[in-house]
Length: 267
Image (tube, rainbow, N blue to C red; front, side, top):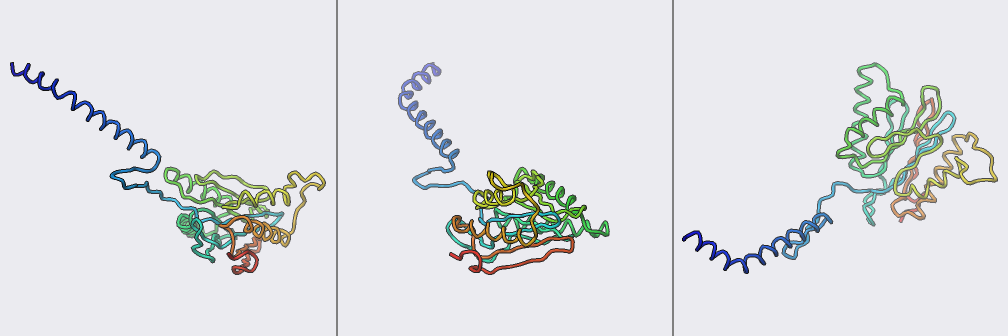
């Protein structure tokens, strides 16, 4: 009798319980959909997800010749429409006459450059010699790939002179995919603007009236790098201010710096 009484009481409450249950399910589905979209609305308050990455802009490039390599980068660090710094270096000179330059997030760039220098100092201490650029290129690829589950937000270029005395450039994506470029490499916010310029200058892409590519001099490469960055800053608001230029030969690395507003526009 008690069981029959319970069943009867449950049937009486079903018309009120069922709509409440259906409403709760619909609200849960709505919250799930909004969570997948990156925002959750609860009690009229909008809560957004956490993003660990930030693109600090800037443009970096490298050009290699017969026996040299040139690395150039602007010195602007920005966050959206805000300029955070006008004199932030994106490049680091490494032991053995190499230069590592990175675009992307400043914090990840500083972390990566610091660790690369640390590993090279350990290598030099253990082997009593500096590492060649081929070994450093592979080491950097492995370091980036080891962080593939939580990548460093950096787009890197390694430039120097190889064991045969030829200028060489290695470019990377965020997970360490490595590629040796024949003439040039570009990363950063103005890559889509600068790369076609260098393709025409150096690769003779779509230039029917010009002959095949010939070796350029170090001075010509430096002038091309300056012109490319100067053109980019006219269209890209995240590129500008100063320029750092590294000229790499078998004799070492020479650094040339131009203050904000001298060659590039200072907004």
